[in-house]
Length: 348
Image (cartoon, rainbow, N blue to C red; front, side, top):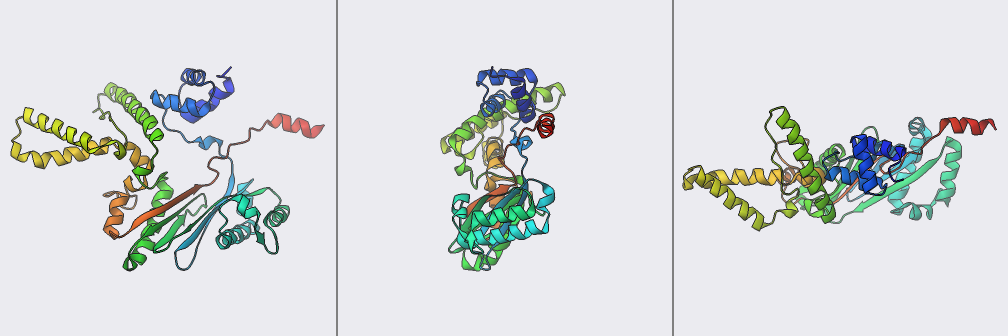
């Protein structure tokens, strides 16, 4: 049976949808959790959900940036408990491995395991540290950024749970400004967690599925607003700037012109009204960009502008070319523990 109680419970925790809706979604998708989440989203029955309930990894994220700010490393190491992640031995290990990855430019665990550190194979070295520290430790993932003719900088949140690296090309005169800006944008990204740099980087499949989901969400929200006799939200036709071709914008401009004509507004003032209407139309129809795309987001450090505008205002020569974000434990699924069975097994 595709809609088992266990799957229904898991889907409810992830989506916030009702039990019967979760059961229907699981039946429709053959018990596939990810497809069921999408089914609920497109039906307006659930908000976008991250599998935070499944994440059970502890550990820390670390960053190393060279003195020239043109080469940097981001690294995530996992431990079994948060207690060990605060241990001095563990922190020293984190620093040593991060520097080692930076020096060797290992881009994945396979490459890292093939390196030599302190005169021994990395796996052997790490196993020795595991024996000393007393619990399993995993060098999980890493990213290296190198840039010529630009700057790399980033930010790791004080709790070590989120880390961001960014690189940007810029003029020689703008290097210092770019360095400071990238750190600030790293702080923004750690808070807002965009997935890509630009709306142009969002894949078509995501745009199409989210288009249905956001429309469904808005319709559901409007039902509640209508019940409360509050103003309704505009139901979007689109969700990304990638969808708004010049033809679509020109057609919408003609719609606004027709509306102003019907309202008896003098044609000589249309050019003062229509740009604002078009900007609002674009804002209403690019909701996905505001969630997914870094440059489209409202800048946390100055909510009067987007991240893109903050970059332009700092120096027009700055262009972000690399963006990496690590959230501690993201994608690691929790192991389901049966405490009674564990105790029973230890008594045998």
